[in-house]
Length: 343
Image 1 (cartoon, rainbow, N blue to C red):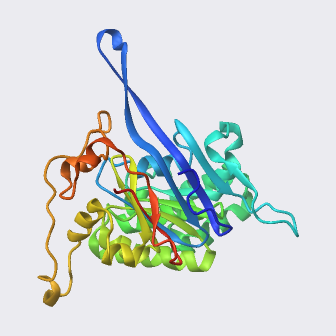
Image 2 (cartoon, rainbow, N blue to C red):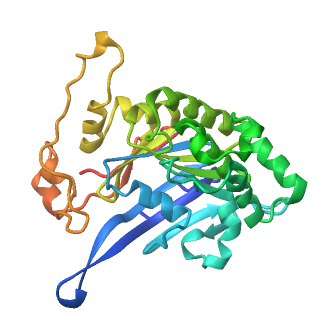
Image 3 (tube, helix red, strand yellow):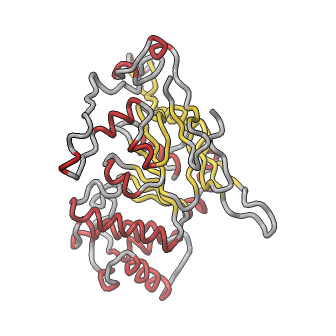
């Protein structure tokens, strides 16, 4: 499948993306095998939406995010970014393949595609003040200098709910939630269109997570942002995301609108994930059965034949052991088409 729901509404399209890491073994490291962290993945992100990317640890979620911001050079595939550069009267379909750009050509697109990292403690330089941390982005991209630089930093801090006078403090003086607000301010400094939020709240206390989620939603409405929201907390994903992509061992197994994915999962792995989502209403807690998967997650360096999930699937048939299922559309007549990789 080379074209997954191409549309004028799309901001980004990922086509047949692969990210393989070489693994050397044997005498003098002469034997080379590959860890298939991301293996032939296709999906799209529409303008103004929040797309969730979920799955177990090690399934390739973060690797996809880092390929999009080009922290990694993809092994193969396309990352088509719709630039919005069309001249008046032309169709807004100008695209650039981020996967093929040379390092020197990436600066402009890294202004428009920014990343929020998981750990606000390790993603901020402890030797720099908040002003230096945020101002560095503006300086490097030649967006402000002098008096204007300080004003821009103050505005960014206010926008994320921090007082401007905090800009002379160091990161150790802030709580985890406040540090994540600084990280968000740094991401907003270049007026981005797409933000890759990689486990943006998983390192925070539960009491702080709702505040950061509300901040992200407010910023999206105010600035017209688009999010790729990478997470493992399925309750949070359901709250914030419009659509959700589910990954298993480097492959996309299901893509659907969030509500329908949670209420009617089509892939057996998605079904097992959704059965683990806590039910907050005590009266409804006995209404569904927890599905416990047997066996271990497949090794991306030596995956099983056929469907990667078949050794753990309670519906597996003989065909699943030998034939890899394609990601194909189902319910194509709905406003948001659903895609499932299952025989």
